[in-house]
Image 1 (cartoon, one colour):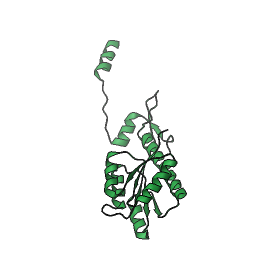
Image 2 (tube, helix red, strand yellow; image 1 turned 120 degrees about the vertical axis):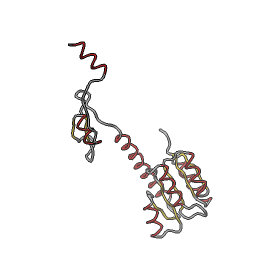
Image 3 (cartoon, helix red, strand yellow; image 1 turned 90 degrees about the vertical axis):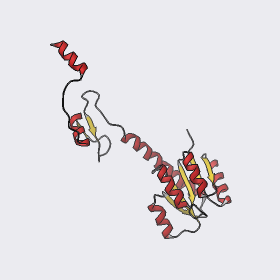
Image 4 (cartoon, one colour; image 1 turned 60 degrees about the horizontal axis):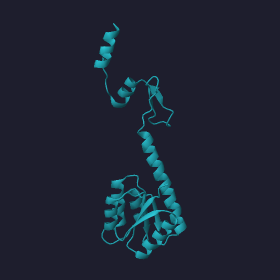
Length: 188
């Protein structure tokens, strides 16, 4: 099984080293960035399963790292860490799509628990997106199941023409392709 890849962005070396050591001991693949600029550079050139970023950093702050993470992958989980937390910064981070918010110093067991939860949700969102791209078609009658706004597998089966009209507003005209025309003429 492939290890989850986590990016840690923090301008405090002791925080980077501590979190890095704990995450690696827990089996994660870890990359570190000592500031927001380096974090964004790593985000733009690598694939990560989760980002843990400090909020308050010189230059590019954690909110910018969060915004860039969500531009790259809107589902990518981001956990904000801060030693200077207040309700405004928490609300701002959550509004921008942060998946969690922890105050420093944080308990490592709590951080590992929250990382695990975020990674589980991320994996589920990725699976759902895969299944959303699958269009169920009956292999016998060629009807299509429309699961829109319903529990997957509970949708209504409908003829392809009806589905195309319903979903895409496409009007169909019936005729013969060359091969079917030639086959029909032979049968006369």
